[in-house]
Image (tube, rainbow, N blue to C red; front, side, top):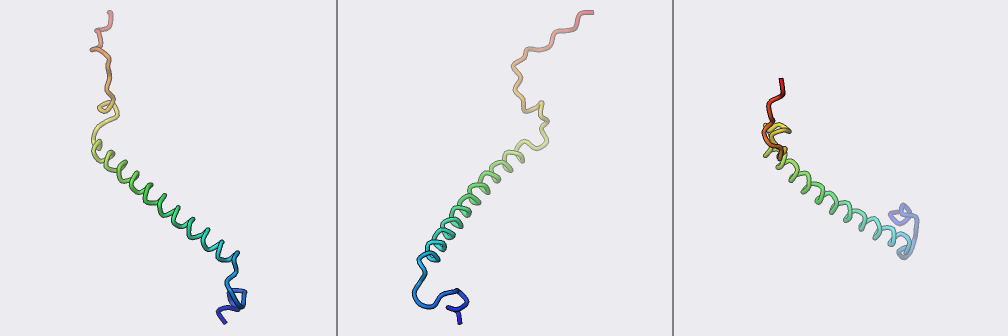
Amino acid sequence: MAKALLGYVGGSDPRLLAEMRRLQQRVQDLESELVRIQTENDALSAAAAQHQGETLLDRIDLDVPQAEPALT
């Protein structure tokens, strides 16, 4: 009955095996991408936690000398 459900009787269909290998490779590729993205997300979260409480101006390194008083 299992063979009938799969649509063949007899040996393995080469097209089915090729599709199975292709799908297994795709799953491996997606799992690798997921690990890479999770690692990147963890790094970004750690950086955000380190800078929590600082304002944007606190993080900008301004190379501008002290402002001169305005002319009156």
